[in-house]
Length: 220
Image 1: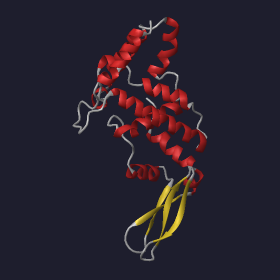
Image 2: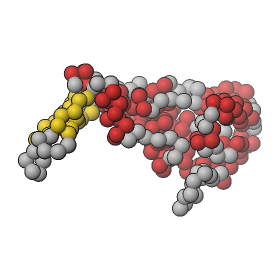
Image 3: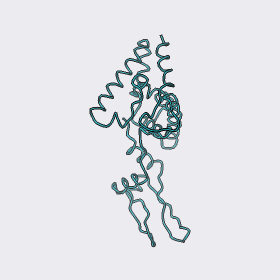
Image 4: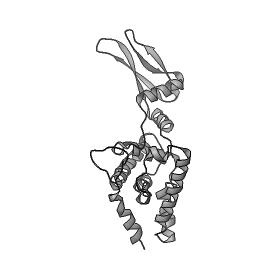
């Protein structure tokens, strides 16, 4: 019967997220998963069209709807807790796996086999997992995952020798791509400040954008 499984999914609207943080408005698990699915679908369409990333927007969107379904049984599990140590991380993974098993055990075997990979995310490729995680970052300012800051990106590009620093005639500096950076898809555009000082703006082609995403947003 589908009724017990569907009834369990219906509990998502009663589970409140962000239990370790103060929030001016409570957010339910249903809201979070819906927002994430919409964003994941759009990000996949963008990635497939503009960077040639192989992905399945519909598949990723459905996986996004189910990605936090195990928390119906476990309750909201904040990232700072479940990833605070290897022991806790492994314990949470085991708890999550058992939760998925309990949920899909309410379904006929043939449907359980089809739905389990969506709930666990096992059917997603590494690229699709990155896109789903990117959607999680954007979904209502999700505190579970952090987007890299501009400073962190600049420091990584410098460490990889993909950009170099050029000093301004006055005070300060700007970044320009090295030959290796140009090969990696970085570009620069010459500008002139309001005071007449020439400088360059660092530009990221789709290839360079994908390189940064793959470094900072890793699939679980």
